[in-house]
Length: 69
Image 1 (cartoon, rainbow, N blue to C red):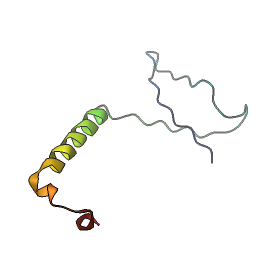
Image 2 (cartoon, rainbow, N blue to C red; image 1 turned 180 degrees about the vertical axis):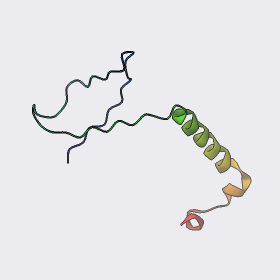
Image 3 (cartoon, rainbow, N blue to C red; image 1 turned 90 degrees about the vertical axis):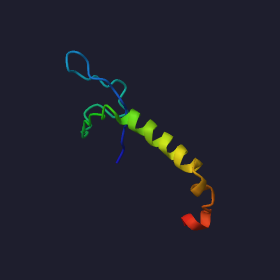
């Protein structure tokens, strides 16, 4: 199975044009559209910041790789 993953923004006309597809004319393809969660980027940034804070805690400094595995 060949797959293509791209990110696009729906136009004001509620249309989507996907140029330069890597498929042959007449080839049947499956199209699945998934709306990106609006707060996704913000949540990722918050998780990264929380991870940094957690790693900086004194308790975390004494945890070894062996403790983790």
